[in-house]
Image 1 (cartoon, rainbow, N blue to C red):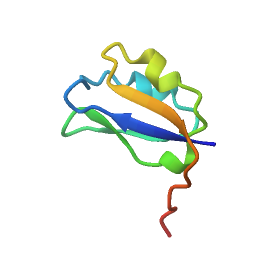
Image 2 (cartoon, helix red, strand yellow):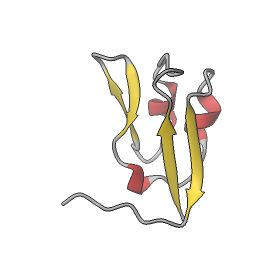
Image 3 (cartoon, rainbow, N blue to C red):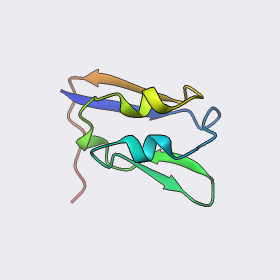
Length: 72
């Protein structure tokens, strides 16, 4: 199983907690936009740490039976 990670940019008032909580470096911080974004979804292990630490409920992680395409 791979996690499907989505971030609602309208709800994200990023504190950086999600980025720091991810053990797989799935998320990254955009310093200009002051928002988190998904950079490495293929590594998501569906631990839900990012969802749990976001006080704005901006992140959704679901288990998926899909295989994201790895960039070469």
